[in-house]
Image (cartoon, rainbow, N blue to C red; front, top):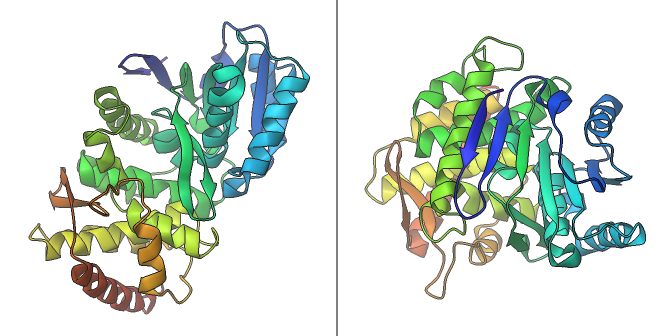
Length: 352
């Protein structure tokens, strides 16, 4: 069974293989399963057969689950069945579900074992690996949370078969991002017709994308340096999600945000990589954006997790696989925003 090792103070394995869920198991005898309410019944049944939970808690799909209200309900359910300190929480769903489940595990009894079974491409290559857990605030995305690494992660490509094409393409944004910041071979593989579940080479591409994330978090779990590079495109993306009240999904917002970051990278003296991000947007076909105001977006960007007392920092690229953190002058942010909007209008005229 192919396994990737995530090192650090709390090492664990990420299994990437078709049928991995059927062979998964945990040592804990008392287990609670937190599952996305939108999952196909068959996926939930497979997880219940593998882990034999005494309690399955369904939560709203997407970012609707990442609230204090939902978190409080989950914690109360865990307490009602007296889940013990040596019990475990298992998250089954997309990135939002695994974020919530991991945070619930970190909070309950000051921390119980956590395991992750991501069911979306975005969850597999990004959200479920690395130990970042949390919920959102009205003021911004992922502003409340904890680093709580899982004990194991199972990425089963068979779980992706039922995803709507648009949801699959959303997750591809994170794979493409890993290509831009670390492994350029992923760029052409994502845009290939063979990049879909069941096709030859898909599992290898999936594993290579996960390996980028695993390597980074092994070296920098708590985002003291290199891990920030995984946020390429996310500063604007999180702002878009916030101002649209998650009307634009995370994956679509990241697609848009990467193109903005590529334009800023060029303006700050880096290579012009906007052709790569433009091609990805043409392939991804994200949901159209509503009218956006730079001032409103900039207020959210100022609260980004990478901001410090000196202000917001953007992840930019000197070139492919050469990311860095930079403070971008506000006039450059604003002029880049205008160029970004103009380019999106041109892309839409090409059946986008």
